[in-house]
Length: 297
Image 1: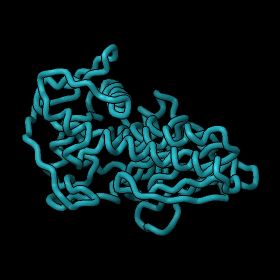
Image 2: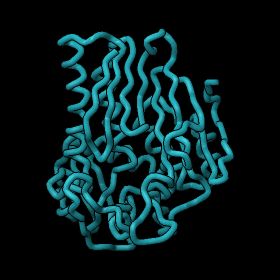
Image 3: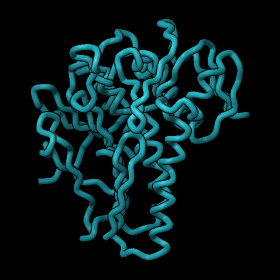
């Protein structure tokens, strides 16, 4: 078994492959890591020279963008429509106001002008010529889809292997089987006890991503964490952890965030309506398992 780790997107990315090391396998692993670099270069809100932030400087005119930005942003807009704007990639400036604007490597902070009237409807994507048009000055945040997108690209590089896991800080895709020929056993972190597992599931050729209020809290505002409802401008507290299992990591990534933001009843209804699988945990550690998740003893 091979394990390799690198740091991207403020996250330790670990790639596990059950095959023995050889030049072919190492090349595939390197290409998988390179997917994270490409997505970070395109989608980072914290780097002023990222493709995303350069595009955000040019409101009112179309800007050609690469597939590494176009695809996750397009998916984010689809989820925004599906949730009537509860999930909204124009949340970037509000995130900055609440202190979520420090680059994880340099420590530098980003700053943008704020317009309370902006919504996802102010982002226009043209699929024919792959351009982005902003109707108003705004800051896009694709943090709820970009990591999942990078995981999917990395998994695509490894898909012909017998078994592998691409794990980016607990958000992951598990391909094939483990070294014993069984589905992968994946532990979900206990939201209050960092080094413990609250639930273990079994998956194969699926992704699981978790959105939780326990990881990133605002330096500026009490009871504010990085999951902010774009309409109320507040952090919801119905859930403490929302984990979604899906065929693709970008889908699991976006749906876990949307479910958290939608709250208790609407979040559960959202998962059921979209026929997804999820493990949702309340602040009182009440666990709601939806969609036939396969749990392990």
